Image (cartoon, rainbow over all chains, first blue to last red; front, side, top):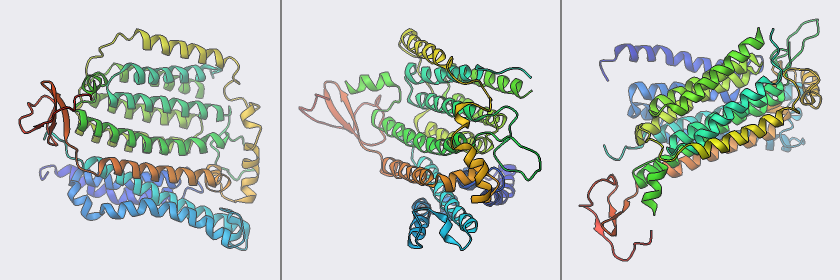
Length: 141
Length: 117
Length: 209
């Protein structure tokens, strides 16, 4: 592990930019290609890269599996929660127009919120899948 | 400019057949899942092909005076989610393969059948 | 020019697909599958589906490849020689393909603006999304707002897939049961089939499998 200097330094330089790019993809998704699905996968890819280079043990210290499972469930709850909030405000389920006095602003808030939910779920699920496969011991070793 | 006509559909069918063949003729379970993935990508390609409009551009609205043609966004939306669900089901399949390997010591279909009988 | 790129990429995809079939080293096959995903992402860009291309490049070429490599690390990467002749699968595949090609004769031609798909709903999204939702990316507005129910379902599906994978993989390996010298034997977790069941406990009257 210790002799792969280029790999380690390269990963250390790249990971912040990957995370930043994921956030860009998330919040620029309204104006260009991108959105919650892609951003979640890119966000997860940063942690997968970290785990591949620095080992699963270190990655689990940075991001515990329990937190990842909570993310996976939390995103779905955010998404559905937006639906219930719109219902509480007198609209239909997931009818974002009621979220703000101006309907198009309401749409903006609604889309932002549900894309956040998608981001959190996709991120959590992808990292959880990676942990599940990488944490499994090979039997004959 | 060459006329594509129906070529896209035929190419998609060829890719679909490649995936289908891998799925039914190969005994290795991981290979089968790769074939399933190829099959899935070909279906996605078919939807996207239907959404394309010649001379159109990606469905991201631009502020401009003249008339702009956009490709159909609906197939894109449907396939976007299909890809992510595809990787989720792939992971489920792969975890089944891991468990089968642990139970039978092999992921070759014939060997599993011999084992089970 | 677009047509040329389209045809070239499709031919490249077909070649990669055939290489995947013929490749018996699974490690190489998985890498070829990653290449296949990346080339198809390029094809999606040519067909104006930038969001789909983005997702395919990130998911298909990235996460799927990592997951498959993780599986190969657990199950080994050698594929056995197929034991059956490929004649019957080839026949089935060719017949299916023939029927599908026959079916395409009724399909609308590639890229024409008056194809049936483009006449319903899509014009509404493209024209009204600017006023109703006021964001430029129509794919995002359809995904999150017009068809928000769909996306909610998809989110729930991938969450369910996570639960399934964790149910399958978070438990430790189970003991192995093999049929050895006329009786069923339980080997401890970690044993291989080829191993003699030295640590195993023989069991009687359980040979029906």
